[in-house]
Structures are given as structure tokens and as C-alpha cells.
Length: 115
Length: 114
Picture 1 (cartoon, helix red, strand yellow):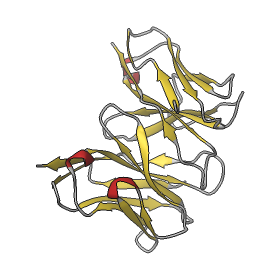
Picture 2 (spheres, one colour):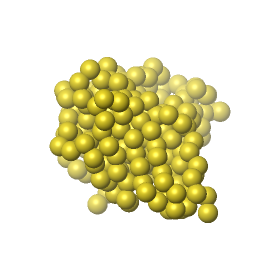
Picture 3 (cartoon, one colour):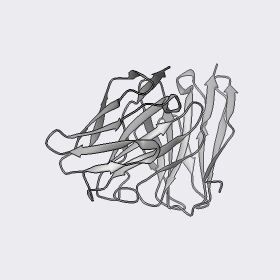
């Protein structure tokens, strides 16, 4: 079972460059999330989606955009990368959000460095 | 909005010793609580979750956690640490409504000494 797959696993960007991170899940989950993980700060929610064609802002959305054109895919875009976006990015999915079925399944992460 | 606080960013124990990782929550109503584990260079995986069915929750790898409403706590324990338990552990809280309100703590890194 693939679960949640993120590509790429590593990337180095120059300041001002753009890139897209891809997340794919094969569990038919409605909810998908993008988090960033920084030392001492745990996971912070960037954007999330409650279903195909929907997106919403999380705690730290500035500088990122997302799209959910297909239920199984959730894309995270950086239009103009900044050093402050150096982080490890995790995608997750869940059957629902809130309640008994909130258990999130995570991808392996993408380590992004912006120089 | 609910939140969780993990006390201690680093915990070090000897192999065979008790593991205790602390998590306190803030919520106006009893929430759903989770513990996740992250091994080096991997994503998070669920250890256990509290869903109000029982206050003592048993998870994978011998871990368990007890929900204490009076103390607003959900501490994670394991009677005897193993070297393979070395990882980062995250407490998370979720509410009862369907509006994506899962919040993670800052994490506790567990080191196990031989």
C-alpha cells in the first residue's frame, strides 16, 4: 500500500525561484493537508482541503498556494521562494477532520532548502 | 481553539527505564487526543488516540497514555525503554466538529542510552 506519497524528497532552490510539491494519496480520503516542520515549533498547518476542488488557509499560508484538482492529489506551490521557507514539508490525509476519524496519514516529507 | 503543550523538548532515559512524555491540552470540551511518533527522516505515524471510549489507551510498541480530565493531561508512557524507541514524539488535539482543527505540540525528542 502506497498511502501518502510526496515528490520530490529533497530540493534546493535559489531565492526567487518557484516550485511545486506534489502529494498523492490512494486511500480515497476527503481531507488533505500541507504542514511545515521547523525545529522547536512542531508542525504548522499551511493549507488544507476538505475535498476535490476546495482549498483553505491554515496557520501559516503566506507565500504558498495550493490546488486540489483531483481528489487524490494536493499540490503545494511556492511562487517566489524565500530563505524563510527552508523547512521540511509534510503532506497528510484523513478520512475526516475533527472527531473519531481525524487520524492523519503522513507522507515521508520533502526537505526544501532555499539559498 | 484547542491546543496542546508538550513539556520538555528533549527527554533522555536509559534502556529499560520508564518513559514518560508529557502533554497537556487546552480545550473547552474534552477533545480527541493523539500521539504520533516520527523516526529520523520519516513522516509521522500514529501511536495511539483517545476518543473517550476509555481513559487508558494502549498503542503500538508497548506505549500507552492516560487521559486525565482533572489535570487536562494525556501523558505518554512505556514501562521499559528500548533503543528503537528513540524518535520524536508529537501530541495532537482535535475537536468534535468537522472544521480541520487538529493542532500539534512542538514535539519531544526521546533519546535512549544503552
